[in-house]
Image (cartoon, rainbow, N blue to C red; front, side, top):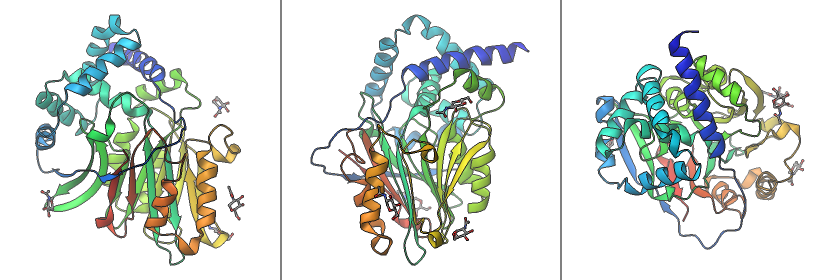
Length: 361
Ligand SMILES: *[C@@H]1O[C@H](CO)[C@@H](O)[C@H](O)[C@H]1NC(C)=O
Ligand SMILES: *[C@@H]1O[C@H](CO)[C@@H](O)[C@H](O)[C@H]1NC(C)=O
Ligand SMILES: *[C@@H]1O[C@H](CO)[C@@H](O)[C@H](O)[C@H]1NC(C)=O
Ligand SMILES: *[C@@H]1O[C@H](CO)[C@@H](O)[C@H](O)[C@H]1NC(C)=O
């Protein structure tokens, strides 16, 4: 192996120790009275240089709190002694392996916020371990709705940095997505009139060795794959192929909805290949798909009521009554909505102007 591969190997090993130790699961607890509000919405011009794209958004945010939390996290993991090594390797990753435009955008964000580029790299890769509930439904007229709860358990107020972003080229919205300020990937997004995507973590079988090898063999962060797919795939079918077959650095569930009847799929991903597909199919009664971080075909997860409660709520609603409002209600059911829920994003690619993320407070 070349020196470059060795450094990549060491970097990835350390990175995955970091991610493994800091992995946050979707625990469940009851919620208090909510007063939700819509996430701030911004434009990013894809015609601007990658380094400059996020500057106008970053100006509105104070990064000090996030920096403090990053320090606390590293400190709590007793990784302080190795920080310089992490920083070195993170920079190395950015310079030699990270794809554009992500690398450029990360550099720009570091410059604008005063963070080290390595800190922004680690922040971006740390978020690889997030969750949680994604639901696709088809109503009786063949309209498709896609909703997702993003759950995160971390001592930081992600609500304050959640934003919806329209990515613009030549004055047109190419795609829309939801992210956290400072984070260049997307876990939730929409290509207008084509498809919508959300991702749920699949970390019940963490294999560090496998993660390391898939990073070496050109795996990319999942959130970058989602953004690439929103940018590149011309239609639903192409998106299914791209999401299924692109090597990624961690296992994941990718939930994709289109605009026509039957266009809905939950792809269970291994790092190199797809492991399982669940299809929406109204004609055999499968008018909804619920994904809550579990391999549902292996039997229902005992310690996670979210899947059962969401399924029950959808059964109770019925296909004849499903629409974006009733889907939002399902995602707001106690325990499906939990104390870790940061935002609920509602999507319908056929009606792209309806894209909205509600911040759950
Ligand atoms: C975002 O871009 C769209 C399309 O160019 C434009 O219509 C809209 O006014 C822009 N919004 C903001 C907040 O700048
Ligand atoms: C974990 O991975 C091993 C090896 O690939 C596989 O045999 C096992 O079934 C997996 N377990 C789960 C829960 O996915
Ligand atoms: C949908 O279900 C019908 C009825 O069971 C079946 O004939 C058809 O092949 C299914 N379609 C897909 C895409 O699985
Ligand atoms: C939902 O309805 C389907 C079809 O009637 C049924 O098979 C399933 O058990 C129900 N699930 C729950 C959790 O009620």
